[in-house]
Image (cartoon, rainbow, N blue to C red; front, side):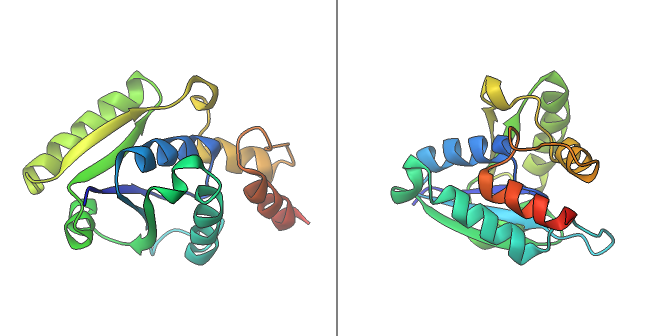
Length: 163
């Protein structure tokens, strides 16, 4: 079984995250979405809310029937989580050269820490390249319309937090 780990905060899940997740689901038999939980940070959505959003949106995609999706939380090193999940690949989305520079450094470090785990870079589709969760949070906090940047269920959850 080909298992990949897709780590991130997913706070909130964006169309960019979903784009990379769907690509990964078309390549692997099982994709583990590892939601980072940092004890020093206060997320917009707690782990269960993020996990529910990920599961709901991933189930709508064409790869949903061909790939097993697992959503779990983690703290600590991504490569340790990957090992524990039996993953042989880390999935990372690349929007631009800045992402590539950062992700190459991380891939190099992770490769030393866990030589048996490769990092797979998946390019973001052009329509979602400018989207970041940070910008989505900022737009939502200022009352802006985020429907172009997040799945409908996530937009509803963001709107509910404002009211």
